[in-house]
Image 1 (cartoon, helix red, strand yellow):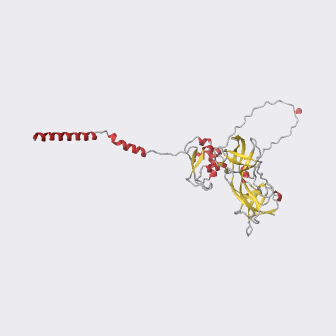
Image 2 (image 1 turned 60 degrees about the horizontal axis):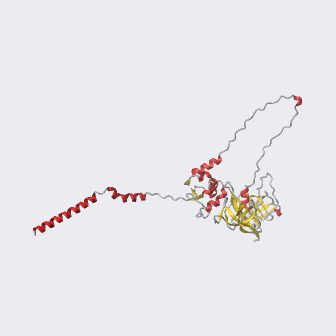
Image 3 (image 1 turned 120 degrees about the horizontal axis):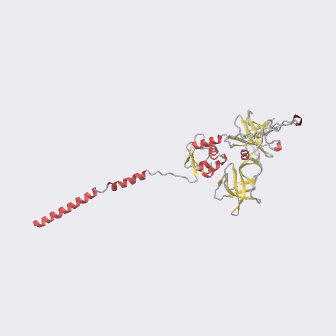
Length: 383
């Protein structure tokens, strides 16, 4: 019995020693093995994810910025603002942008010096572009080469008439050409020489530099140009209610470059507003703004303002464009001055406008001087 008890004591001692040995091994494990999961967790927590949008740079709107200013400063072409607007579908109204708002600028329309850089467009980059434009180019003074004079006697020299060199003056226009075209006109019918039917990239909105497919009523050749137009509104006379026609917006100029996939392909050369699939085409004709003159024509007539638009010039200035119910048949010419008076009594002067585009029955004019707010229905009185 004692022998059996001794054997059990020995077996119990051996088992206890084995358990202690196992615990010792666990404590002597390298500290790295225990800390490794903690390190992985810490590394995961410090990973910084940066979202990049291929094909765009980002500009943060500053105090006082407008979409027009941004495209003028960053793209050097303010009429490209529809392409920037189209790249930012969250901007519902292009006239309403706010400081801190982030705007995507497509690389395809950026200036080369901004395309090469990465990340966000910083305000100092924009300021650098402005300063670069403001620099005055210094031309070198031509070197005068001495010419050896041949002695002559007085009796052989004939008197030469003096020649007065007149310095050529640059013409001073009433309005820039792009604004003249973009102002549009009122027409009884909507011109229809064809339409935009598609784009190579299957886009619905296009602008300057984009390629489009067009369908025309007559055969065209490479180099042919068209105005891209849109009937913006049906114009009624504010007094009689008579339909005067449609306000035709000219949104761009396109040029045929050839054929592709059985369709006529064209390039948008100028863009004054976004253009869309289905917009109509009109034949291209030269439109030149009138010159400023010291004694403009002031025809004796009375008329009414039937429509008003607010447009931006290439310098970012806002112009009030008005449309009146008098045209060439009434003696109106390009450059004619008109005095504006209020419709409501007491009748008071409101300002002065000058005609920039004349049709037979209607005219387009720009407000030269505004004393008070001008509204549809105000009068034109030249007496």
